[in-house]
Length: 292
Image 1 (cartoon, rainbow, N blue to C red):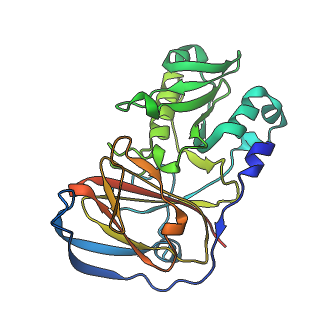
Image 2 (image 1 turned 45 degrees about the vertical axis):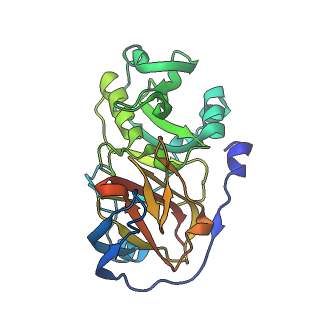
């Protein structure tokens, strides 16, 4: 790991214990004086996130199809490339370690044809006979969402966003499916174009090498409530949507792009927080954390 990456290893650690998850049917009338808000009578489910997902054994397996409303606990694992001295000492390895944030990777079972893959790149930053590093468009998204992609002839594919971007930038709000991240879509295109089958991806966040998991929650229309247990260490909380989102009554994303980080200090543990998508729209939430 480069010195820059190592410097990003910190996070917020908070400690207490959590209780049993609760479910309730509630009616909440939002302020009718605000034209951006609406009266709702919605089923609300309180996710005491990690008690529900981990204690009851509800987890995420890479490749499992998950729709809106199905929480997913994703293990964060560093790629084997980071144990490769040749990769770490090469210019491309140093660049990725220094600039990458949320990332997805996959090792194809056969070699990739870089000559066929090359036209997918909008720009190329580094290139040799064995690899290409550059940016590739995400279908149906503007240039701002282009993914940085490292592809190697021996089968390695990695897609990532820069460290300054919140993890929620990868959520595909058009697909409304937690498993279909923007990064995964780009990687699938690269693998198929290069002549390899595409399989399960693994996620890692270079910003937080000490993080062990990423919790994803997606919902269409229905608002939902979350209580974060405080015996976990939290590193990042972020969200993405197609329009305005209300979090604890405060609205976010006045204009496109509709994603961003949420200060951990405003999302305290052991407190019920309400996430409310605007007018039956889609919202996805990402929490980066470490299990004790």
